[in-house]
Amino acid sequence: MVEPKLISYITSKFGSKSDMMYAESLWNDIISDMLPRFKEAGALRQVVTQVWNQEGSFILGNLWEYTDEKAFIACQELFREAEAEMSRRADIANIITPSRGVILRDVHL
Image (cartoon, rainbow, N blue to C red; front, side, top):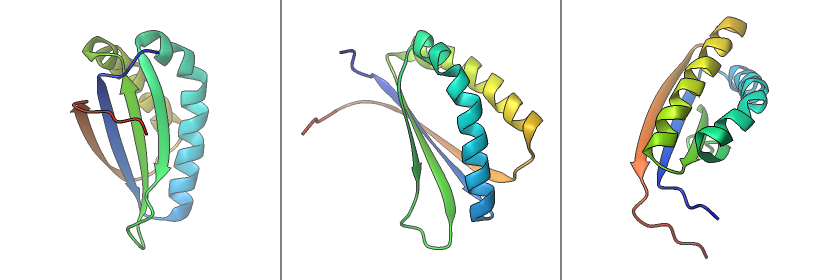
């Protein structure tokens, strides 16, 4: 099994629960069709979360794991394509906060 070397964690904050749920569904439709291309580019895993410890907030978290920096860069092109399609389909206001990390320690229990 290939272990990831890089991760990205992106949060998207929405104004309402309905906007958040609609955006998640729409993004899933777009990304699902592209998953084989992400895998080929070197993405290993995607996790979508709903942040629950900030009452009154509507936040989604997207975690992506990559084999290496080359895979991360290749996937950025795919994300730009997906984001363009998302913008074409809907205009949902949100605040995006991206974080990138090099995995220093990965403990499997």
